[in-house]
Image (cartoon, rainbow, N blue to C red; front, top):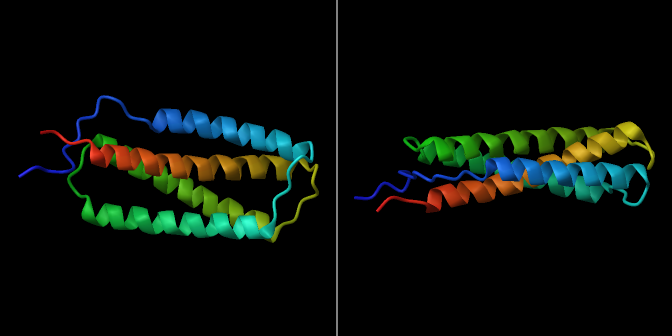
Amino acid sequence: MNNPCSCKCKYNCTLLAFIASLIIGIVTAFLRITAVITITPAFLWTLFGISVGYLLLTQTASVFIRDCGRCVRETLSSTLFGALLTALLSVVLLGVTFVATSIVGAILTGLLLFAISFTLSSGACLTKCLACSDD
């Protein structure tokens, strides 16, 4: 019987996910500080809901995937980190309002978009690791 977790992928995509998310976060912070974009409460609530969904995904995955390789464990912890950071930053930005050109608001918004993009891309990496199996 094949173990779906016996993935011996030679390439892990979490580093690429981190780099791409970092670029997205920096661009978002720049656009926010120049007042090109604004963040609405509906967007923050949506990101909070997505992060809670990914927190439930990581809990479910950690229960059902016990004896998996390093690939799955690493991407699962990356997904957990991104989801927790997204939930924290969305609650902070919901609780405190910043003016459009605030430096602190721009940094927090950039971190929020970094976190959500890292969560989504780490979830894709987790799917890739689970799909990779030895025959």
